[in-house]
Length: 249
Ligand code: MG
Image (tube, rainbow, N blue to C red; front, side, top):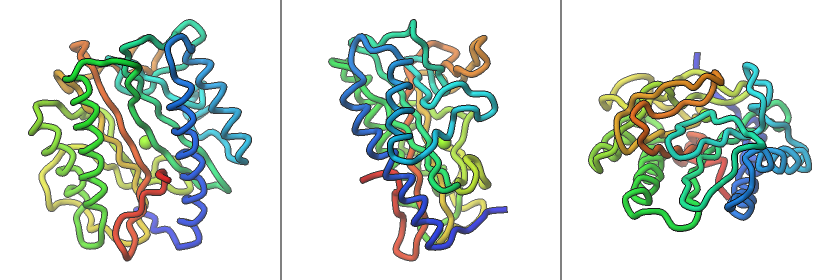
């Protein structure tokens, strides 16, 4: 069942989203060569607490950290570590969620560290653009798979691949609610979008094959062919006036 949110509930989720928007700005400053992924995680956990929010991922199905840090061929769910340090030329996926007054917000972005090749920058740009196209579909009367199709068509037009194994999701009183939001599919299918739906849309895109495999840590998803991957995500409310991105300033 898809739970519609009231204006009051969306206002709470807007507050959760604004905490994450501020974390993103902070991460753009602190994620630089030499910092360990554990130091990133500790910084974000402290920051989220200072804003009166709680981390959404820590303890979720046993995940041990506040931020998922996924570098280069890691697609999602990388576990922060004191041994893992950011290097010049990395692309770093940062996925974060928080809870305010019982409501969740979820967002992610992929940050280039220093100089990266033009084709890798293109991967990041196309992934971000595919999310924007999906957001534009979040309006009354569109069908759920119109969102999915917007991602896939843009990504594949540019010669990249959409990961199948992970999908976006409804979000609210739980991190993962119905419906699932795949990043691929034919348009015009699934439930009609209605005001009050809140979706976390999160294209995961690779430069090679879309197949992924999970490392022995039980969490980290990497591309099977070792190709680079990007991940962008926002939490979006469908409103009477169209899409409202809750995790953006
Ligand atoms: Mg998510």
